[in-house]
Image 1 (cartoon, rainbow, N blue to C red):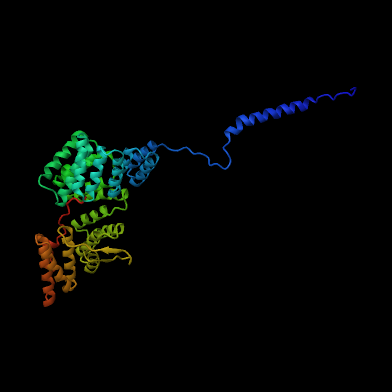
Image 2 (image 1 turned 120 degrees about the horizontal axis):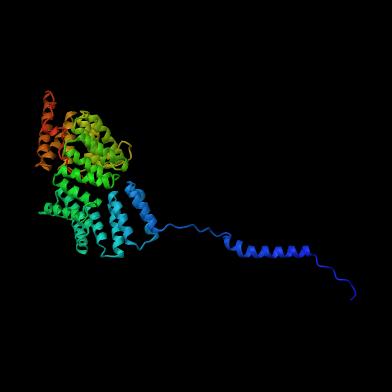
Length: 420
């Protein structure tokens, strides 16, 4: 009891206090701010509206595939927003993806079957797949749901214009198309689809000067859509302004490099002014863009024929008419049947090329086919007779006619016809 107690070391007490304070700080400040081990770090997610805004910007820049991707991301973030499905379908229509556009319009209708714009876009997409009657019915339903919907009236007018152009329209379709396009213009004359529709109606009724004015206005709204430049180039061709036509068509190529239409029309345009080597050059490029399309092979062969290169003319016209393997040895091309319009030209030139190289067995078969298959096409019938004349000259050993009858003119029939 008399043993002396040791004095407390003040430095030890200080160190203990510091350690306790550090432990409290770590527990209250550091630990809450530290993510758990082996758990993925959360990343901020973009809102669906941000994806939609990005898609709109990409669309205005003509980047349709990227816009489609952005709209799909918006839908993935908010699958219950029907407007995203409609916007996606609209861009897919401009990109020529009609089946996908119809599907997305129908997805919007699953969310609201009375959505006027969804019905309109669905009908628009169906019409471009050749389903005119159900397409027009869908657009009419949209107009019933919302009589002041400018896009619905525009789509209705556009489908009628397509029918007029391909010769399947009913009586009164021209007047209805004109009225619907005017109604759409009165509701919103600054809407891209309204101007596009108005242009197609004017083109179908051969008012080419007015088409140019309307398309130029549409291009000021969005200068980066290939189909607007293609349509403008097509109408410059109809106005016999080949230089302007080629300029517009050249603008379309980088905006949609996989589409062979600009190169095809440039080829036809050069042919009308007799520049066949250039016509061949662009016809070849069109074939590269779409190596299974018999129409493009027919055009390439037709340009070789105009350039009096009958061997190459036969090679490519045969692919278009009869089908076969393309130059790469693996791509299969399905031949197309004889019909009025462009195919009458290709079949006729195939027969003429056969006659020029004295393969008259098949040439005379083509001549007979033209007479029987397209008897109301005066140019085709004249070509059929030209085939017979050339083969007769070959048989008798007389000089083969080298003139250019009207049927072989460089001014191709139907060159100004709209090709939607």
